Length: 196
Image 1 (cartoon, rainbow, N blue to C red):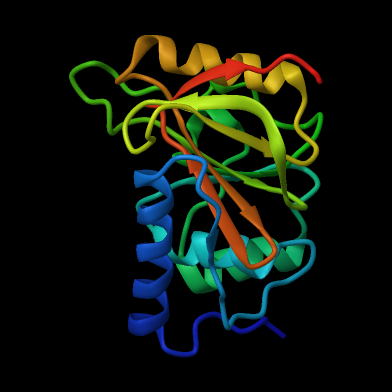
Image 2 (image 1 turned 90 degrees about the vertical axis):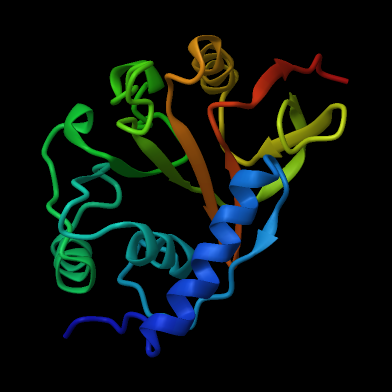
C-alpha cells in the first residue's frame, strides 16, 4: 500500500510552497510546515511534503542510502513522478539525513553564471534546530543571526561557507525537521562561531 500524499493537492502544496519560499527568503528562520500527509519510513512528513511540492517528472532526484528503500522510491515515483538517479551529481533535488552520508556540496550541480538556476537543492532531514553553530548574514537577514542544526559537523558548515564564495553559482539547502523547515540559499554568508 502506498502512503497518502496530499489529500487536497492544490491547497496543501500551495501552503507548503509558501512555507518553503518564506524559509528561502529568510535564511535560518525556522518555520512551521504542518503537513497532513503520510510518508513511508524513514521519511518525515515534512520531507515528503517538500518532495511532493518541488519535484515532478522533470526534476531528477537522488536519495541517500539511509532514505532509499522500496517504499520510499515507490512513494516518490507514484506521487511526484520524479526519476530517481543513482548518482548525486545528476540530481536536481537530493534527499539525505544529517550525518556522514551527506554528499559534499561541491560535487553537486552548481549551475553556471549564465544559468545559475541549473543548480541542485539539497534537502537534509534533521532531528531539530539548536543554538547557533554558525552566524548567518546576507539577503533576508538583518545584521547577523546565529543558526544551528542537530547532527551537522563543522566540516559541513565549512563546505557551506565555501558554497557562497562563487555566488550565484552554488547549491541551496533546505532543512526538514518534524513539522518545521528552514533554509540556507546560496546567497547566505556563513561564519563559524567559536565554541563557548
